[in-house]
Image (tube, rainbow, N blue to C red; front, top):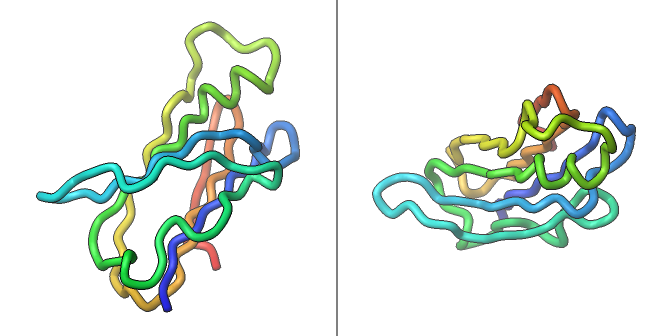
Length: 116
C-alpha cells in the first residue's frame, strides 16, 4: 500500500524542526488543499499525509511555512526573511509506492530529495 510522508530538519540548529506548519495540496484541474499539519518534536507528522486509496497518481505540492518556524527559533533574523514559504512540487507516478519528501532548512537555504 502506497503512502506519502515527510519530515523537516533544522540544519542550522542541528535538530528536528518542531512546530512547523505544512500544507498538502493536490494540483491540476481539481486543485485543492488536502491537509494541513504541524510537525511534532521529532520534526515529523503523525502518520502518513496520504495512504491507501487517498494516495492517487498526480501532481502535488507541499507548502512548508518555514518563516514562521525560523522566526520562533533562530533569534536574530532580519525582519524580511530570505526564506519564508517553501513550496515543493512533485509527482506521484505509482500510488502503490512510498513517497517520502524530507526538507532540510536553515535561514538561508534548503534541500529536499525523494527519501525512503
